[in-house]
Length: 428
Image 1 (cartoon, rainbow, N blue to C red):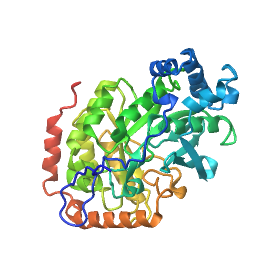
Image 2 (spheres, rainbow, N blue to C red):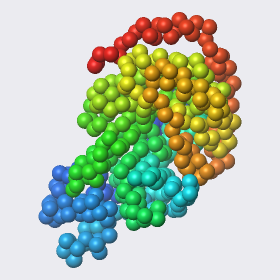
Image 3 (cartoon, rainbow, N blue to C red):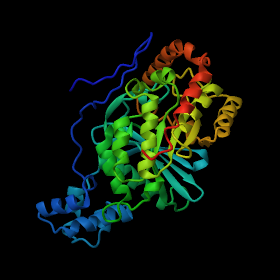
Image 4 (tube, rainbow, N blue to C red):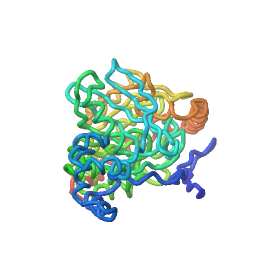
């Protein structure tokens, strides 16, 4: 196994959180039809001795009908159906169990991959649609101390087909009445296990399969797909140039480097200013307003002055390009932190709104089954292991950030300097 590449942020004391970008190798998943583009599928079929149009036929079954059962592919020669499905549609993920919450409107599914790795996805029903929260990695290497997935560590990247299989299963289940009635899965959020932009090539290809029309893909609206990131700045710029107008969600959680270095270890490499600049660039290139995700942690990042700083940073880059989603912290196993009080949450939101920042407190779903943001992986790894790591990581951060809890003495000067930049009104 290759030596894990790590980035060590500067800290004053306590254990150092480490970033990991190297997956533990478990062998290669079987080749699957949807790992390939439409033209690549047709070429592969020709190389295997089949007519190229058979690739489109099977693709239609997969993307239009969510079907991989050869017995239902009656437009294929009966003598070839089983062999075609076995060759090009191998089983990549197997359901282990479902957990149901929120009165039956939230379903968290645990999947086992071909090599024994495990991931989770969460399907959520709303009045007129369903949304799937999808995983792009088994585990996560970003090591954020308030996130169960991050404390579990990175196992490996998922392939394009492993990502898409979560969506196909969800579309089929929703259409067949898993919620008691037929529902269309219209929205996908890459907010499950993993850092999507750390698995860029597979995620990029999965996005193309989601939005490309049948038989190339599912034909979903790019505007209904959200890709989250903790701040991989160079990859945000790559995604901006991809021509896919999906929504970018930036998991910010602190507007100042002093705190964010500890809450989000990747901040040791790409600072808040760089991250917000790249997010603004994404908005300019795609026309899609960026979501700023902000988990409110009691007496950690929920201070009114931090809301003022966040508003100043966003407004200095222009108006209307970002929307802030404060999220009550979803405690992980062993967590010593808790969600902000209702009063502090209200003050934080009011401060942003008064500064002209579009702000909506995000709905939390599935928290009682560890299916909410930051909680995935609690069921797929040793709970005691996650609890110990979370408690140790949070205690280390807590010991370091006393100096960051109070409003800086020169805070007014800082706000004035940020406001004076006004560098976001141009279109880059």
